[in-house]
Length: 79
Image (cartoon, rainbow, N blue to C red):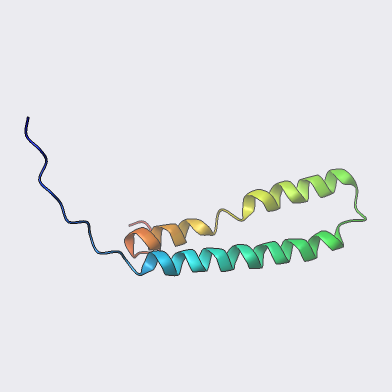
């Protein structure tokens, strides 16, 4: 039985901590915007409110995809 050679892990990238800070900041701002908008829709029918929260609960994820790509590769778009 042969053991795998010991590998030195790659040096950590500065992009990951910066990206995590950016994510936290983005989520905080997004949550603040949604909370302000939620005050505006309280008088609307419950079905409209439910649709708003459904879309708002899913939509925050899409802008993070380029950030994850940048954190891992250093590029904002897939080539």
